[in-house]
Every structure is written in C-alpha cells, then in structure tokens.
Length: 160
Image 1 (spheres, helix red, strand yellow):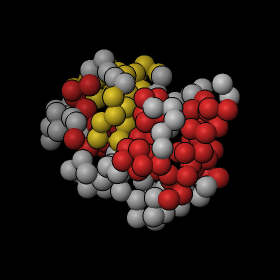
Image 2 (image 1 turned 180 degrees about the horizontal axis):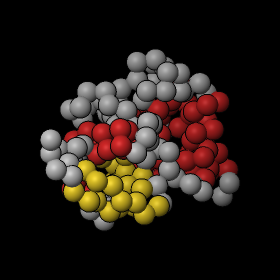
Image 3 (image 1 turned 90 degrees about the vertical axis):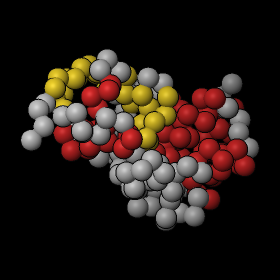
C-alpha cells in the first residue's frame, strides 16, 4: 500500500485537507475520498470530458492529474459555484431543456459551458458546439445542451 501524504487546498470555496497517495488521481480523490460524484470517469484518458473540473481558473481533466500535485490549488467542481448566477442559469436551462438525461456528462458540460460564457458571453451555436466537442454525451444528441447554453447566453444579454 502506498503511503499517504497530507494535501491542503480550496475546494468549492472551502479550505480542506485530505490525505492522498502519490498515485491517486484528482478524479478518484473527488469521487471516492470526498464523495463529490458529479465528477465522472468515462475513459481515464482525458478524452471523455465527464471528469472536467476547474483548477486555479482553468478547465482540466481530473483523471489526468495526480491529486498530490494540487497543494494550495483552488479547485471547483460542478457541485460548487455557490452564488454564481451564470452557473445557476446554466443549471436551470439544462433542466428546462432536458439537457441532463442520464446526467453522466452533465458536470463536465456545465464546466465547459461556464468557461465558454465567461470568455465569450454571446457565442453562436457553432462556437458552443466547438467548445463542448471535447465532452461526450451519449443521450441527448447535443442539441438540447447547445440550446441550454445558447438560452443562458441570450438571457444574460437581456439583463444588461
């Protein structure tokens, strides 16, 4: 058995400490050790996208990073984003447009959508499709997801 090492970081706005082995992926730490099950493992090669989280402001595939690398990092999972109006609107529109279905890809899709709308508040549908192209969905055919993201962008524009 591998020895455990202490790790201190910010997770979804809260300072936490966790013990991890040198071989524990961020995805496994989040799901298995911390019970944050919105981060899914689809391929463990970084191509599925369901394991996407935000680390220090950047989208990353949590299956490709060892947790031990994240001392003092700021990590945001799709369970996080407390008080974030854009994420709240995305969640609402994903539900309203039935862009959830089985829910396996949803966490990664929400992270990708949020990242897109932060960088480009008025994306067209082609831009949305390009941004989420790294996230596989086997249920919705993507159209409901594109609709939900596009609607969120349109609603945000009406608030200005």
